[in-house]
Image (cartoon, rainbow, N blue to C red; front, side):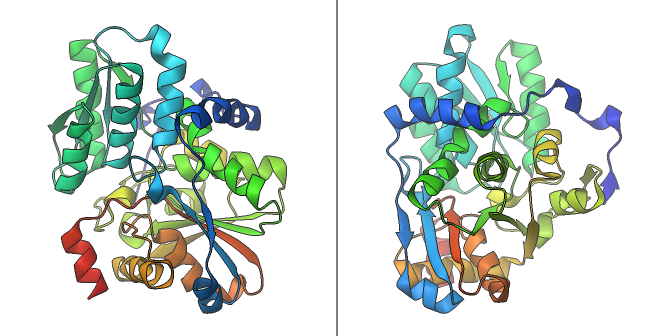
Length: 333
């Protein structure tokens, strides 16, 4: 791990306005006009397996099959009056791309997305089908990010940071507001950690409404920069990323989620790709729902530390279902 100094951080932490619960509530008033609340599914089989009252938040049923569309809709609705005719550019491993592409189509805003090589073709095709231009560059997220920032300066596009953009957190936080509204007695919530917007939104909601709710992050062992940063209190970067879960494949921690989660996160569980794949299989076998590797991270984490959640009411966010048929069938077999 390499510790990042202030000059290597893209944005000084002092430049961020940390979203509040009021921001999430305000976002919910707009997001609900375009996206129906997703089900919070109680699974008897999963409850029996984990020896708790287990609920899955089915963000795989969003129109883009992932939770990030909430952030895209809220961002575009807020920023449309100020965006130039050239539109926006962003970097993504897939789900954030589809989020902004979907919202761009809703609000008639041009969208360009830089994606790293190796992203599943289905995510590339889906992003293009939604009307966005896709540019392939680099082998992991941070390389795509640097290229998107360069193009924004060169071509005059509005750059949207998929991790350090506060407006996105208020949007994606609406899924946790829905969980609390339906299950206010929830005791433990599991959420994957890729860049950190999803679990950042979770912290804003639960620590505002009931600080006793235990918030647990789930991260890939092969992309554990955020875990190392959270433990040390300093931003660090990994020298390499080794995971097939593209939604979790970030090589460094970022300023905004670190600010939110330094004191708003109770634990992080690190998972091997084998454990993530077992999560995909377990979700399908117990609920017949389809999860991508990163989307199954919450369930995989709950399985790994199930002795700590025995008898509790537990919500696990199934953040996305964008998995190739080849990978899914291989896992199920």
